[in-house]
Every structure is written in C-alpha cells, then in structure tokens.
Image 1 (cartoon, protein in one colour):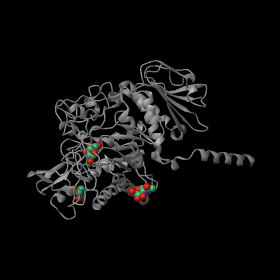
Image 2 (spheres, helix red, strand yellow; image 1 turned 90 degrees about the vertical axis):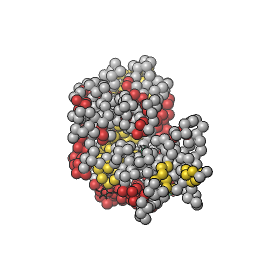
Image 3 (cartoon, protein in one colour; image 1 turned 180 degrees about the vertical axis):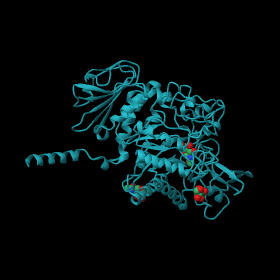
Image 4 (cartoon, protein in one colour; image 1 turned 30 degrees about the horizontal axis):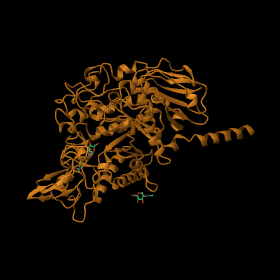
Length: 577
Ligand SMILES: *[C@@H]1O[C@H](CO)[C@@H](O)[C@H](O)[C@H]1NC(C)=O
Ligand SMILES: *[C@@H]1O[C@H](CO)[C@@H](O)[C@H](O)[C@H]1NC(C)=O
Ligand SMILES: CC(=O)N[C@H]1CO[C@H](CO)[C@@H](O)[C@@H]1O
C-alpha cells in the first residue's frame, strides 16, 4: 500500500513537470516544411511540379520527420506572379491539378499524419478574378471590392491620385479604361489590391478560409500581410503622398519612398485577429487538432509581437521570425547570432512559442548567402532552439542558388528590371527543381525541359546520394530531427550565448533530463572553449550526439566540458552524461 502511494505521488510529480503532448498542442514543437509546388515533383511531365507530385513524395516528408507542410499558392491564377495573383481563391489551377487531386493529397497526408497548410494571399487578387471584373464594371455588390480613384488633373493632364510606388517598380496606380478610374496595386498591375475597408471583402475572405478548413487544410500561411491596408482616405476621398527616402535616387524604385501610408497600418493586425476567429470557429465546428495561422511580415519586432495577439484577442500562432534570415550575413559574428536569437526570445509575449527560419522562396539559399560550410550550422540552430522549426524545400540537403541567365529568367520581380540589374532582384535561383536523384532533371520530371533549369550540381547534391553518406546535410538534418523527440528539446529552457566572436552556444535543459548543448564555430579558426565556465550545472564530461563533417570527433565520443576543441566551421550537439 505504502509503495503504491509512493508510486502514485511520483507519477503525479512527473505529470506536473512533464505536460503531455496533447496539452502542449501539436504545432508548438512541430517541424514545418515549405513546399514550392512548381518545383517539388512533376507527375505529368510538363516540366512544372504539381499536386500529384507532392502526394507521390509525401513519404519523403515523413522520412525527414516533417509534421506539417505549407504549400505556396496552388489556386487558379494567370501566373503573372506565379500564383500570388489569384483569380479564384477557392479553386485549383490546372497546372497543379484538380480539386480531386488536392483531396487525394489531403487523404494521403492524413494517413501519414502530416498536416497540409495553404498559402493565403489576402493582399490582392488577379485582375482576372471575377470580383475584379464585376468591380471594374461598377456592379453594385462589387463596386468597392477594390480601391478606385479617378485621379487628379494637374495642368490639364490626368495623374494618379498619389505618388505611391509599387513593390515591382512604377506607380501603384493603373488606369482602367472601362471604369474610367485608377485602381491600386501594391505589386503587379495584374494584382489589384482588395479594399479591406469594405466589410463585404473581409466577409468574402473569411468564407475562403472556411472553405479550405472544411475541406481538411489545417491552416494558412498568410502572405505579405503588412501590405493589406493603406491609410484611410480623407473626407474628400483623397490620400497623402509618401515622403522621399533620401538614400534612393531612382524614382521608379520601391525604395524611393518611405512607405508610411501603405504598409504596417494598425488595421492589419486586427485583420489577423479576425482571421484567427475563423480558425477558432472551425476548431469548434469540426474538432480535432488545432488549426493554425502563420503570418509572413518583414516588420519591426514590436509590430511582429502584436501578431501573436494582444491579451484580449488571439492572433497568429506563428508569426514568421525572419530575424536570422534577414539580418545574418556572411560576416556576422557569434555576438550577432546570439543577439538576434535573444531579440525574439526576450521580446515574445508570455506563453507564446518561438519559431526559427533560415530560408524561403524569396531569399537566397543558406549555402549561397552564408557559405556551404554553414548549412549544417543553420539547420542545427533552427532544429535545436525551442519552438517551431521551419525549413524551405532543399535546405535539408544543402541545395544552393542556381545561376539563371537573363534569357531564362521568369520571376516578374526581375523581368521588370533589365539585363544589368536582374540578378539583384530575381528569386528564380532559389526556386529551381528539387534534386531527388542523379537521373534526368534530377528526378524532378521526365519532360524535355523544366520551367526553370535544374541546378548543375544535382549529381552531387540530391536526396538519393545524400541518404548514403553518413554526414551528409540530409543525414545530419535527420539526426537533429530525431533529437527533437527528446523531452529536453521539446520542453526545455534555453540559454543562448556567444563565446567570443566565433562561437555560438546554447544549452537546452529540463529538470530530471539530460541537457543538450549546441556549439557552433562560425569561422575558420580552431577554437578551444570552456563550457563549464559558460553554463551552470553541466557534467564535467560531455558526449557528442550530433557532429558535422568538419568534426574530428564522432558520435558518442566524450570530451571534457572545460576544453572542447572546435575545428573550423564545426557544428555539434553535445549532451550531459
Ligand atoms: C471559383 O471556382 C468555383 C468552382 O469552379 C466556382 O464555383 C466559383 O464561382 C468561382 N469563384 C469565383 C470568384 O470566380
Ligand atoms: C486588442 O485588439 C482588439 C482589436 O483591435 C481591440 O478591440 C482590443 O481593445 C485590443 N485589446 C487590448 C488589450 O489592447
Ligand atoms: C496577393 C499579393 O499581395 N501578393 C503579393 C503579396 O506579397 C508578396 C510578397 O511576398 C508578393 O510576392 C505577392 O505577389
């Protein structure tokens, strides 16, 4: 009897210190993976990836331990901006397949316990969207679905209502002959901005969310939310000009103006709260695992933190943390890494979950931006810090930017520039076909040619080959992923520090469990560090749990905590013994 009571007490204590996963919420420690569908897998050999291709390869996501994947847009689109110009928000573009294909993808994903997240593009629709066509025709219901203005007349010449410059260069306003008015577009002229100051638009967009959630999507990644609102018009229906940015001399360039009236308006956050209400509503309606919002915004930290919620209203569970992605450069030292990691952890509202991102479809790849010998280090940071990890397709095996000539360039952001400048604007190099194997087109497609050329390094950098190499990027990624099942990595605290300019280290710890210490030599000096003097309560000996190919040590080797030797660019995870 006495023994039983003791055991019960003990298990109660354990239950207190180790919440069960169900309480924690599936997404809080999840591995997310971004699929760029045009380039993941082509099932019908037209040279463009598609939904059936993703379905075929879902087992690969399982292999690398992905919990949820978000798909860049798959909706009906004239593809002026590769699907970020949506013509029908509730239908699938034929280039990617059919609604039945998507339903099969959802069914297969459910079998494999992988959640499908959709990209939601709220800032605009295509000019071929039925809503825009009706709005341009002045139909009562849709007349104010977009932002229209007749412009102003200066010296007898008609001009746009403001000086605003769009992200893709040139005026944000385009004249519409039919309606005899200008419409606003923050991006491409084929992407008219929706008018969110019209409640009907908000309702229509909420219905779009409901549609996909009821179909079985587990949430959305919301694109470019800072651009959703402009400042309200004054009583006469006019807007103010934006001030000059003295650093830029190119009057067509987005950087020419300070975008104080067209980005980060306070209403943007309220819209995210409104979308979250839909998520909660459908959770109530359908039950099951939580549905989630991820929001993409390159905004100042104090604004990003409001995306989480404000105390009375819930926001996005995962506001993308682009701190590392946007600020770490080739020459960044360990203090810089540490500071950026702290920025997020120290400013996050109580009870929220951090997330870590090093790549996406808009940014140069890790290996090209920071050097191929830092790929494992970055994956280690993303996978061993607390919270959610987010990986862009190909980063797990170390794909790098592929050179795309001006002739082959298709990204509208680059095509709108010229042969001299396109390279600093193009995003094609990070969107090339996924490298599955050393076969034709890297195993991506059997087509004669693919929509973007395949990387020249595909015979060396591909999934099939890397599976067979013990310390390939892919296998290190898988080991790091497996480590995330440890309670310490799931729920433990973190202490992050720079040990001098070259070494980043962080310790994860949880009462009664092993501690794990990630140690990264960012540069090319051999370093000898004393972890004993940096971290409290670690054992005098530590064990190597994950090593990269710069290490002279092997997995399971032991080292003294007070003298850990690091080779140039060595990145390891150690545990207490
Ligand atoms: C989108 O497509 C669906 C299915 O084809 C159709 O029922 C719906 O009317 C379309 N919506 C718009 C806004 O064009
Ligand atoms: C949170 O935001 C909502 C919506 O904007 C607002 O109504 C509410 O007052 C805010 N709450 C706090 C505590 O600021
Ligand atoms: C619909 C929309 O706004 N699309 C744009 C939103 O922002 C992204 C930038 O990330 C553009 O690429 C999209 O075209």
